[in-house]
Image (tube, rainbow, N blue to C red; front, top):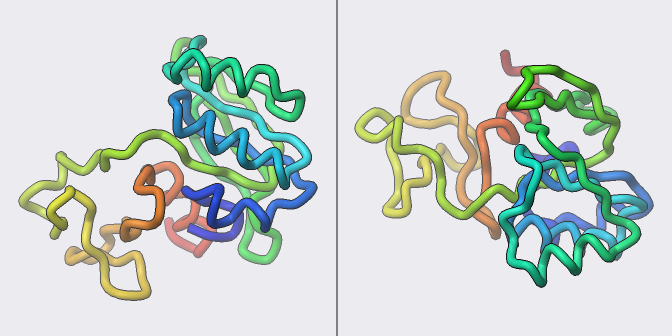
Length: 174
């Protein structure tokens, strides 16, 4: 992660003072992250792949009442733009219903899309810990198979391929 991509608002929120950021997700975690980030960020947009949230009613209401939080419906992050020198500069969003793409400027991407790693497809191929997180070489994103990219667990284990793919791409990966 890094360079403007994060999975933990508590850990990294202060680095985004007076910046515009997005939170990817629609559950309680995303609403909690978005509300927390308003302490630092100029604006927080919640990007969600559906037209309704899955968060509890109270968390939805809290986020919707916050004037610093906006919502981008029917959108999934398809690509993260930026360079290591500048950090994140925007994202390409894809509407899962229509397939249409649009670019959205942002200076930070917070992934808040769940607490279970979506790694079952790699079972028996890549080394995993007891919770299903891929094991990487210390200080890197390398797995036991050359070319396998995934980060270790962090304070909020809600990492996704799109977040890591963007970070990897910003590090010069294909």
